Image 1 (spheres, rainbow, N blue to C red):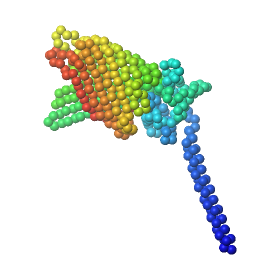
Image 2 (cartoon, rainbow, N blue to C red):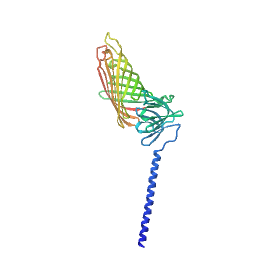
Image 3 (cartoon, rainbow, N blue to C red):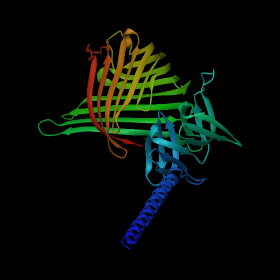
Image 4 (cartoon, rainbow, N blue to C red):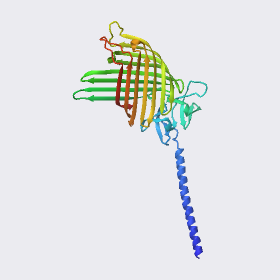
Amino acid sequence: MKLKQLLKHIIGRIVWLCILFCICFGVSEYARAADSAWDNFAPPPDDKFDWIQLTSGEWLKGELKFLYDFQVEFDSDKLDLLTFDLEDVKQIRTHKPQSISIEDLGLSDDPIVVEGIVNLVDNKVIMTVGDGTREFERSQIISIAQADKKKERDLWSGNISLGANIRGGNTETVDANLRANAKRLTATSRLVFDYIGNYSETDQIESSKNHRLSGYRDSFLSKKFFWRQLVGEYYRDQFKNIDHQLSLATAIGYHFIYTPKTKWEISGGLGGRYTRFVSVEPGQSIDNTSPAFGAGTLYDTELTKWMDFLVDYSFQIVNEDAGRYTHHFITTLSTDLIKDLDFDFSFVWDRIRNPQKDSNGNIPKKDDYQLIFGLSYDL
């Protein structure tokens, strides 16, 4: 009798263990199936919005603005304008044709430009062109931009930075600095404008005032080479005896480093420079026109997720009356604050090797230095 009860007890325990195992196994399989379902989730076809999926699995809908320099700019339907590193984007699905520049892995050095619906998944890019498709590797992408030329504003982006120092008391001082940048990006070209202006006043006496507006247009010859078809710069600084100065040139450039974190490019070319001085010594011409050889380099790296470091250096070699050698050097440390607002710390160094004497025989100093603290906002 006792043996029979013991066997019954053991069998009952075994049955309960089996039931518990089945329950746990079922829950585990259900969770695994649910995770798999979410991993494989994709929004249904959409004729109004573009979609991107981050490597975290999150999906966003809105409008793809452009992809350039391993950066994806996306206007979210609810979160406004966002920028992501390309390495953080798993999928891109567009609802209308985009213009995409692809590096040709064949014999041609020229990039391929294709317009169509983009479906980027992991390492593959599938373009729907009419009734057919074309497939490329993600690593071949040079840029993606809007193909709809009617929306010109969608091709533009920029930022503006303002720095100021106002001091009162025994000495009244006002220092102001304005910097602005604007870019127009397409799949085959980029148009860039930069402006930097400075104004200083001490006890209501102007002590500094200058403006520098520069710009260039690039065409992508390949993922590494670009042709800077036109480089232009307008500069004015009466304290350096420069009333107006205009430089124009053409150049060839090359990307030494072109990765999601770091970009380093150099460029060089030939052009000319026109300078009109504020005043000159008797017998000297107030105007000067000179051929010019110019070169420059731009280094931009992401130190952390919230801090970027940039170095921009350019120089020109001109004739003796135009200054012989001039350069413009700027380095910036930029830190993210909130959303599109950044805090920038910049050092600027401008140099003219042989400044032109004014009508009184005074020679402006060769070097000008600035330390600029400012807030910048992405437009």
